Figure 1 (cartoon, helix red, strand yellow):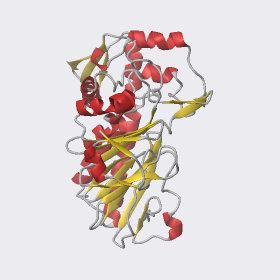
Figure 2 (cartoon, helix red, strand yellow):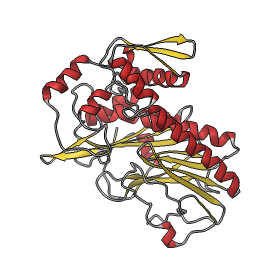
Figure 3 (cartoon, rainbow, N blue to C red):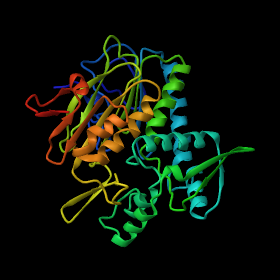
Amino acid sequence: MIECCLPLRGQFIKDATPQQRSGFLFPIFCLLVVFCLVGCSKEPLYQEEGYVFGTLVEVTIYGEEEQHARQASAEVMHEFQRLHNMLHAWKPSELSDLNKAIAAGQDRVVTEELATILQDAASLSHQSQGLFNPAIGGLVGLWGFHADTFKPSEPDAKLIAAWVSANPQMSDLGFTPAVEGVKVHSSNKAVQIDLGGYAKGYALDRAAELLKKAGIHNALINIGGNIMALGKHGEKFWRVGIQHPRNSGALAVVDLHDGEAIGTSGDYQRYFMLGGKRYCHLIDPRSGYPVQGVEEVTVLTHGVHAGTLSDADSKPLFVAGAQGWRQAADRMNLADAMLVDERGSIHITKELKKRLEFTDKKVRLQVE
């Protein structure tokens, strides 16, 4: 049994009661367990929580004075809100303004930061051979996932086919320098950008930068299940659990090393049921329909932009499915990856198998 030491939200603690430790282990909106620690440290542990990007976000800092930890956490939370306001796909934002301009066949000047994000997302999309495709925001919206609640309804097949035929791609975007930013234009008016599979990872990298700048060396950053570790929790690594796609517990746990990030894409958070069939928000750009046959994909990343990659790199594996996930992982230069198919079978790379500790010791793994 995993014992977790979780502080109250926004509270600086040296120890926690059993009542304080309960309630946050497997929140339904997380793709991963918030975090799990073997035993509870008596060293200072500060945690700040908020709700941004449509999910729970947490910053946990170890070994710092309360005021220092509070100030650093507040700066990170402000950054999260800034990015949320900039990158929202359908509510008023810099990104939604760009989408409106593209749909109208107009150019739009954006900040250099947004242009850089779009260019990076385009590069990852190219690397994935289009399986990661933030340009299909129109399809995501057509399926009803540009809303806080989802109606169990399948769109008209002709409308889906029309979007697929339009073939919006990130490569349709062009960028030219402007006086106050970068001018973005699209050769395809069907391009509607949705960075839901990128923004949380980008925010992880920004949070890590801010914490390091503030002199914070030991922290855990969680954005709805995309998690990055800095340093350690005392003498131990930060331990996180991978949410089981069908049960209310951990499928496995893993120790994150300094600078590593982990991300999971699953069919169990944003979805609706219709006719006994599950329709999730992860759309196959080739067919225009939600991906079937996959329950969950987890990737472990490290190095430069580990946070961004933990978010974006899981998507092409999910779309590729059980038959093509390993090839997709190779294209994304991913050594540590795992896919759970619709039968509950676990496909995993040998590298990630070495790192994970499965809660079910009898679990059958297909090492590929």
